[in-house]
Image (cartoon, helix red, strand yellow):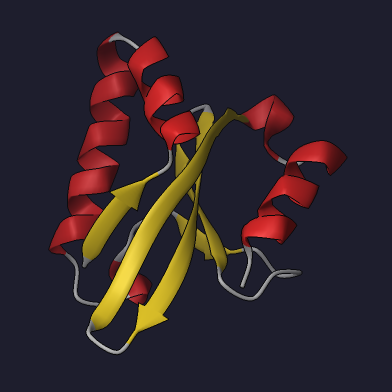
Length: 100
């Protein structure tokens, strides 16, 4: 799959170090290598949204929006939150705004 990143996701990834940074990079590489979204481990669709998914990576949650275009699927990683802040009202509203 094709992968793209928001500026906010890149900043959050840059703040990580050690094992969790490696785990996020490994998850991104897995997304690049898979043929369909069903094959991504620890990935779930956010039920209240149409095209937003999350990947559980230890204590972090990577949220991405799946854009389906004529030339294929593009996964855009939007946010990387800790588990505690991943599902709060403000962040869910931000994801809702990205859902097209």
